[in-house]
Image 1 (spheres, rainbow, N blue to C red):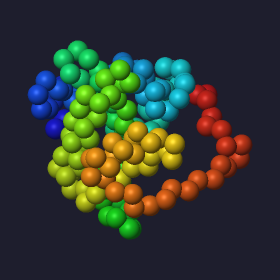
Image 2: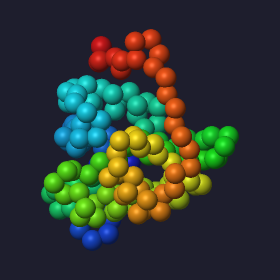
Image 3: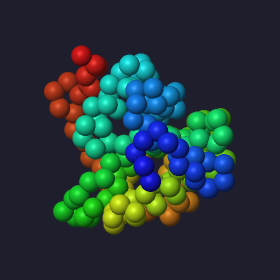
Image 4: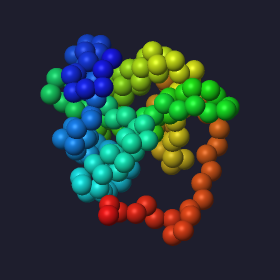
Length: 161
């Protein structure tokens, strides 16, 4: 387990890479926009860099030279659940979905959480993401909460300054 650019061998031909440099973060942009919607590479790297100041971590799963899956998460403590890993983002490149890469990444994330003393893994999933819900159910994740939100000010996420 490291937080540098040295890939970690992980099951089969897979490698997990910590994405800390601007170059590595930008490599994740192509996949992440499939999840979060359009944004420029500059805006993406800026947002990720800002989130990293607050504990966000970004990792990518490669199979050989293929960037297959990207995940962003943070370890937090809550009164209700104690120390947990909150999975903010998980996306597998559309052409290779259903080939086990998302499962491999989720397995790695669970192992990472356990090694770091987390009691649970949590995530939110948009109500319209039916394929993701089926995937999470197959991975033994349970629906345990509703997530509510309310826009503040104009409700828009500001663009990079």
